[in-house]
Length: 232
Image (tube, rainbow, N blue to C red; front, side, top):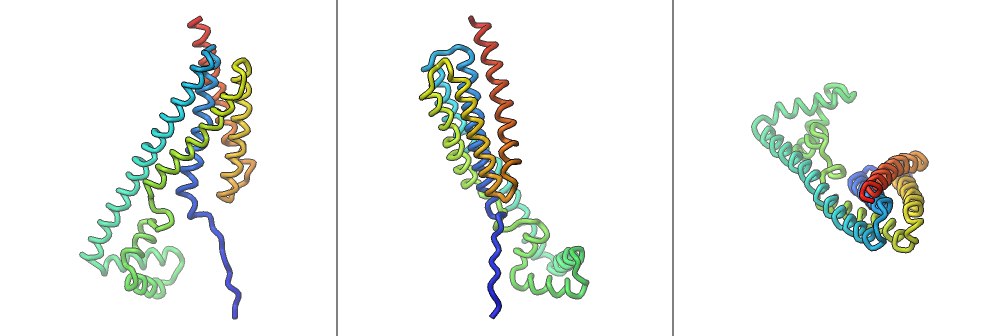
């Protein structure tokens, strides 16, 4: 009896992984930048923390709404394409059969075998075959708006909580430097973990998010310092 060959692919993680990484990265970068910018403007400790908490709440809601609207638009487009394909199958199944067979010929099958494959797949699930091979819509990669919204909001909150906790326990005088340094460590860790989860090199993922996070915090700190000087 031949041994079962078990394969482990990461494609099914794309939807929730993308939303989770985007949310956590945004949470760390935006909240840390906000805290650093307000602190650089010589604000009181209470004002810094209030700004950070407000940024967390607003950011989480914004991420959830944005992800839902974006992914729902993709879902609506997929639904419209499937409805159109269903109508075309009902109107002219023969033409749709030839179209599907043509796709398989382009992928390397000879015409006779492509015709047999198209026939058998359409007898089993015509719409599913066309959705997968003509439209590129599959169960694994299909849009899930609610899942994306919840993943983004939860991960943003988790990410934003990290610099806030650091700000809460750090003296005001050293707050910008400590929050910036710790946030870069958080970002590097997030990038490495996300890259590993997706099967990509960890160092590349860590460097990518750390670079952009450092740039965002540096710009925000400069703006805060300029604003604080102007007000003073």
